[in-house]
Length: 229
Image (cartoon, one colour):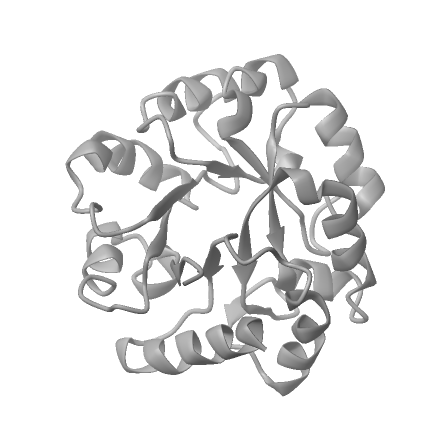
């Protein structure tokens, strides 16, 4: 069965323990992404990481902050090195300026394609330039970001063809005008169906839709059905 589960931040903003708790005991969930999307969340989550109840998950990844105000790149990467050694670390490429610093994470570094709000990481050529500077990095394909750039999903398919050997996980949700992650509507599901068949069966799916506890099963079922088809 393909590993899938939610980002902790999608279920409980800034409360990673609650985001983990909500996914315990659900047989459909075998993957989790621990979210430190906001800079103040980074150090507390890293300090707690080794003691968190994560043994039931087949796949665990970590999402680094999407912006830095206080921390430097050097300090951030030093903190990220403290995480358990097999967790992919998802990073937005527009934050990377000192490539040599981030390169120390090696293949644990997992670069995510970006949405319309960003100035890089949106297209194959922009991602190719980042991978050229960080050749060991993996790839996180965000379907919602790709659809925002190109509703036909041509860019997503091109990214799979070009960076498929780097693919570590997918982010699955619908992305709104202001970058908000929400549940998939009919048009998003139709668009993602054009891509789903090309995603290898062992690649984990991380759901980023902001849902309530009562909505979790419905969103999981919709994503599983989409990729099973």
